[in-house]
Amino acid sequence: MLGLILARAGVEVALLEKHADFLRDFRGDTVHASTLDLLDELGLLHRFLAIPHTEAREIYMPMGPGAEFSLKFDRLPARHRFIAFVPQWDLLNMLAEEAARHERFQLLTEAEATGLVREDGRVAGLRYRDAEGRENEIRTELVVGADGRHSAIRRDARLELVETSSLMDVLWFRLSRQPGDPEAVVFRAGDGHVAGLVSRGDYWQIAYVIAKGSAEEMRAAGIEALQRSVIRLEPKLTDRVRELGSWDDVKLLSVRSDRLRRWWLPGLLCIGDAAHAMSPIGGVGINLAIQDAVASANELAGPLREGHVGDAHLERIQRRRELPTRLTQFVQATIQGRLLRPVLEGRERQGPPLPARMLLGVPLLRGLLPRFVGVGFRPEHIRPELAALMLDG
Image 1: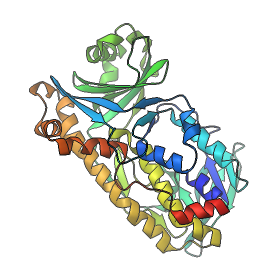
Image 2: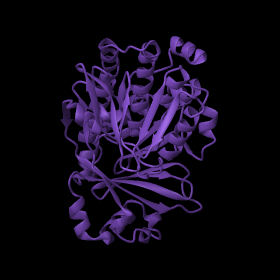
Image 3: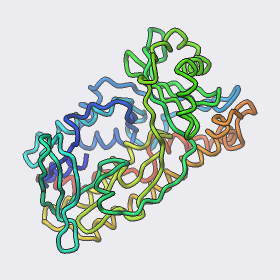
Image 4: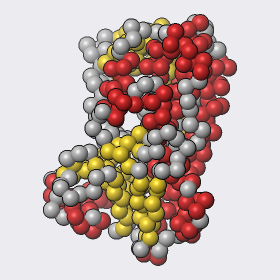
């Protein structure tokens, strides 16, 4: 997203992708209302909506025996009041294809970043290894580390990471969909687990939440134990769980939540998961990363066109995006501790905990969670001066 916007604004951009393409499964699929609004501002919403996707205007969340909470997105402070579920590689392909229309944008695939180039006390470029194993170097005014929660850029920069604890991990797998199945998103809770089922057309992409560090214990119990647990959570899948033939059909996402104490060095900026790994709660990871990208483009497009990015520009980006990140992580930790912990510890039979009852019973609080999920804290928009640069670029 950042590369696309900067190229439109007349900035030379090289985007390095370690793999040959973007086709990797078991990644976040949620595109929230705030991101839909941004796609609209960029004139890309019509193309995005042409991609096969599922739209959710309401999501039902289990809160314990006899209690269910409905997330309704019809009152969001956004133009597009729904969440779209789409394979992430389709979104990335669309953005890359749009960026490639601009001669200032270059996508280098099978290009693995290996380290930073330093000169005169600042980051002056990037080293990378190509498909033939050759070492290459790019000199640039600014390196942006957007290479995920295991960022090689962040590691080489030796930026300090502040880690927070997580109560959960997630098993990812797929089961086929059949006629008569729900059309969008289904959540189930019980049996010490929570499962989220996202429709991907002819199959369900399933996120099966387990207690932190319990994956090996589950593996030791055999794939049949997982099959039985899925049936207890959703009996309609009884005739399909044998599609999980072995643990090779299941991927483990080790959930972590962290953030950099400082997101930048002279000549370097980290955004997205490289700056702050998010829990999957709320599916906010993609959307928070895109907000980072737009805030960065708003701040940097002009300075990059002029050929000089100062420390103050990078500091302003962190100052703008750090508070939304910390607030989001706080809400995620609260949901984990107050709502998910009783389920993962098998205490959901006691009924919804007090925070859940408050969400269910107080209209004002009941409206906050849909806003947190669908829009988030401090949604970004294309500033007029950036829009003018994009027209000029």
